[in-house]
Image 1 (cartoon, one colour):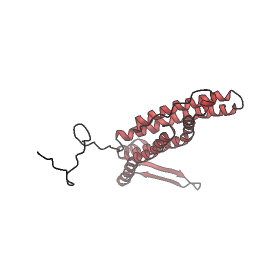
Image 2 (tube, helix red, strand yellow):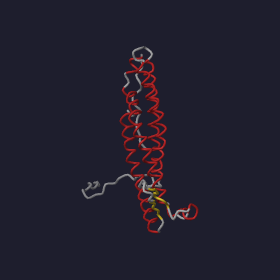
Image 3 (tube, rainbow, N blue to C red):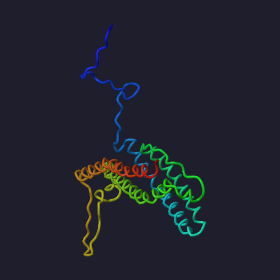
Image 4 (cartoon, rainbow, N blue to C red):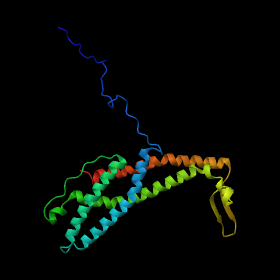
Length: 232
């Protein structure tokens, strides 16, 4: 009777291939022109109007409901606030999944019953808190991302359009600043030489390469907020 050899400590361990064809998974590219980077940019830019709408909705209904809380009329307004915040939270989870690749599960369903039972909704109140807390952060993220993108690409591409200023504008080069003191002394500085334009281009390339890293770091805050306040 044949006896199978027992595996030894030196025997290699067989691992399943990463995909059906046995090819290793391709690395995720995160450069400034990669699809991952532009999805993250799109998330930041789309978060700007979403944050404004969510903040206005939350502030309006919360103020109205709290102001009328001493009467019966304020309680249905707060119930509507929680229901609307849950809907906004569902939309945020969908956006985070599409743009950031963040997979989350929905929170527990809203409690049924009367007004008091519906107001005792922790997930709904966390969704309201999300709208308040993320509004200033998303405004700041929008401003920083737009500034770095515009400044980086504008300066990085300077060698391509530097000829426009002496040809059509009448400047010797790209003007960085221009002012006149109270004593009538005029100060102006232009990027006009080859080395000045080249140095500015290198600075712009550095900003272009830094932008996706910075945006990805800022979006980590959004990932944590969606996972912590909008997911189950």
